[in-house]
Image 1: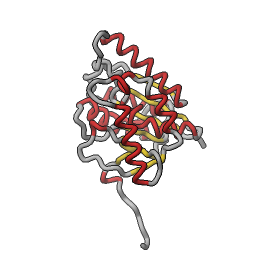
Image 2 (image 1 turned 30 degrees about the vertical axis):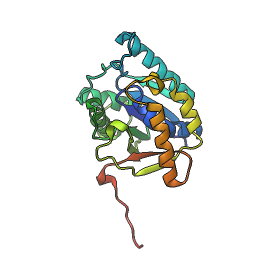
Image 3 (image 1 turned 45 degrees about the horizontal axis):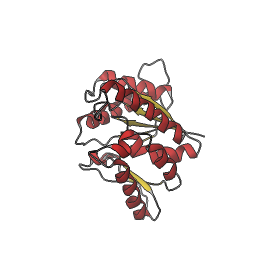
Image 4 (image 1 turned 180 degrees about the horizontal axis):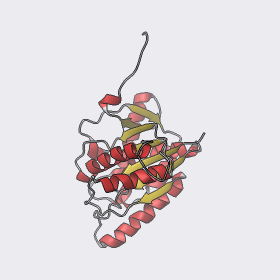
Amino acid sequence: MPKTIMAVGAHTGDAQLTCGMLLAKHAMNGDRVITVDLTAGERGTPAGWTVKDFREYNIECAGKFAQKIGGESIVLDTPDGELYDTKEEELRLAEIMRKYQVNAVLYHWKNSLHKDHEAAHLITDHAIFYASLATFEHPLPPAPIRSFMCAENWEDEPEFMPYYWFDVTQAFPVWKEAIKELWLAEHSTSFQYLRYYEALSIVRGARIGVDHATCFGTSPTAKRQRLELL
């Protein structure tokens, strides 16, 4: 049975860069994939643009990215740089998870150099709780969320350790073509995003004997394996 996979990012670009290869793989396998950008990342406005125009452009580009990998895009209206973990934000995201009957969630690691990323982690963590809790009163049925894991983001490195490794070799060309729709992938003057995430996929792939891989982390409390015997 097809699954619904949701990737949540603090800004347009976060989920697409860090989760896009795995999303593309799932789309190729017939699953529904959705990116949710909690902000449009509009305050990274390049010279010659207005914040308003760059916001509209980022929303358009997120849609084009999603279309190219066979997915869907949702961009919320919270201003970039003003993302806070509030119950309102948590419930808004939880409602989206319920609406789309999400099975798995990919999102930011808990520690980051960026305040919006840390807020996004908490918002998503709590949204998963509200979305999947059957006894929480809501007009929509609970989301059947069975797995959730944190993406490997260069700004979210403190204490991040890869735990889940995915071979994304077949999906990599689809992702590489799609990610070019985002301005920051190739045009950012502060960080070489496309170069970094392509190289990271090669490094991670080499560790598991494939051309390209992507990694995700999890909470230490989730690292449990029950064994009867060796």
